[in-house]
Length: 127
Image 1 (tube, rainbow, N blue to C red):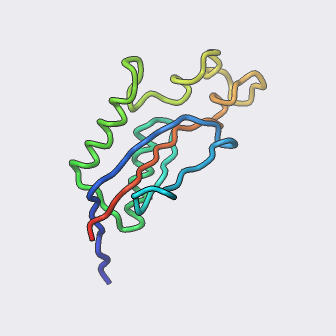
Image 2: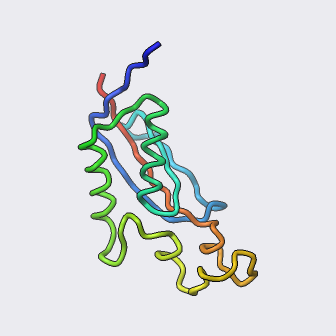
């Protein structure tokens, strides 16, 4: 049985970096969007790919041009010191503890892997 891929007519993308224990989630209540997905990763690119995969699992398909636009919007939101492939440790940790042994008690929460980038994609679909 073949499924029908739903086409995206409009989308919004936002991102944030947060501790997994405190991240509040994301939704589309009280908006004009009809679906959303959130991706999580150590880089913005990983988080965006995770969000796109979540949409694909719901048979929602962005065109390759829309996917490129999404990445460009994320990149435009960064300052010149960071890229889509900057890791959460490189962007958030100021203690230089990322190179320490993972079992070290002095490692911060960022380097211990408890912080992530979250990319939220809200979509409107073709009727």
